[in-house]
Length: 116
Image (tube, rainbow, N blue to C red):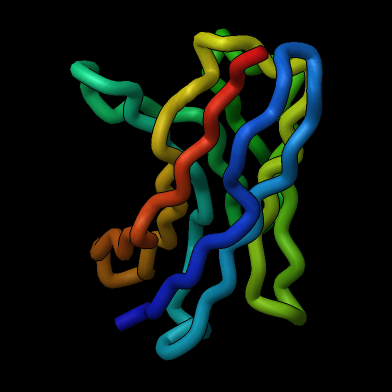
């Protein structure tokens, strides 16, 4: 099992920036992909970004060019740098870690609100 602690959410004005962090502990040797999903009120949870063990990345079309995902394997941490934030980015952001046994571990979620 992988334990996950998220941080970095908050309130930001449109056009602003925010960085989310996600720290992992436990069975970290088994982690393959790390990523982020988000869920806005009344909507389903959607893919935002994912980074594989080899560093390759994939982004949702809605965040390409604005969000950057990165991972620090030595610190067992994944980051989501968000720039040029829009009101439609408002959501609860969930970090996850996939294990090589096929199990996905989720963080508790952190609220991001983009509003003036």
